[in-house]
Image 1 (cartoon, helix red, strand yellow):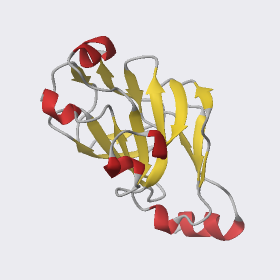
Image 2 (cartoon, rainbow, N blue to C red; image 1 turned 90 degrees about the vertical axis):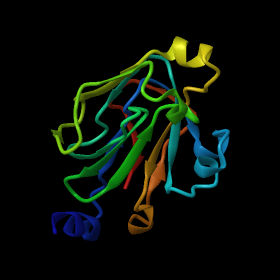
Image 3 (cartoon, rainbow, N blue to C red; image 1 turned 30 degrees about the vertical axis):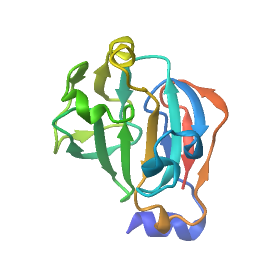
Length: 159
């Protein structure tokens, strides 16, 4: 209910950077699922550090067994995915460590995952990390901030 009220009065919810690095448009992701916005709209971050923190407060609705991606439903109903790397599901969890579990309540900034960037790259995978809003159609005025360096918890998407 409060999310709808905020939308009416123009208060923008912010999705924060889950990883430190360079933010690029989804069109630069070398995977059509992301670059063609099949899962939703958002940004991608080329990480400089192997950590993923919660980009918003809410419920960790999905933690993939392979630990390469998490989904959070924020307190206001935003459905988002943080996907570490491309095709990294094939690693079956190797090089990843989880600090939260599915169903946990998380606050923005809580450590969710750590990943070994160098080992993932050595195994032949890209570590670019899409941050996707799956229910983007509910946010027609969504703004994505790209072409900049971010630290963890810097704003990257405004809804």
